[in-house]
Length: 129
Image (cartoon, rainbow, N blue to C red):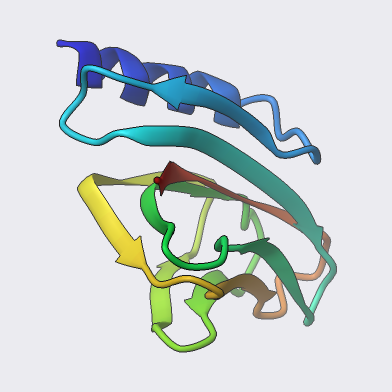
């Protein structure tokens, strides 16, 4: 039940499209660590780094992504060593339960595949200690 509350809180945070990273402690859950959300604006036909995972021994568990892509084209979330995570062709959020684990130093970037406008890309996850 507490995990559902955490997922709800993460979803609520994503509706704000904040540009500042936000964090809070996560306890008594199947996952533990610090909950983090980060959002960026991605200009047409370009790529922008949205989040870099912390240095070892910590790692990042991606729990949700949200993207806007109202026109033609798509917005893609990629990891520099992981590769393609998700492609969004509309305004949508994708949740991962329990999550996708990324190693230390992974750079997560969003690429705007020619939607004709600036789109937004947000990631939420847990930095495990």
